Length: 100
Image 1: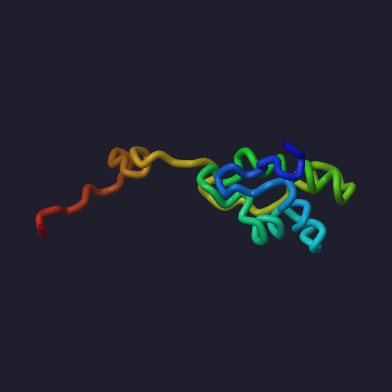
Image 2: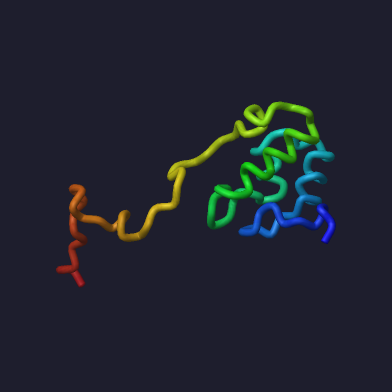
């Protein structure tokens, strides 16, 4: 398998080649690459592909990795379990099923 067809974002099935095409088209930030390719928008929210995409961006654009890693991250930063969201011991009210 060539490096061009190497999968960078498994969730959205984005290849290294697609990342390189986005950079060649002028997308020089993680956010711009994400908008064009959807890399980082899948189930894991970029926990794996964000760094890989930044490494490619850093190498191609000759910028420091720390600079390439800059981008917007939306909360929640990590995935939340449904059990945590539905936890009623944190002051959340029980749903009123009396109207059912």
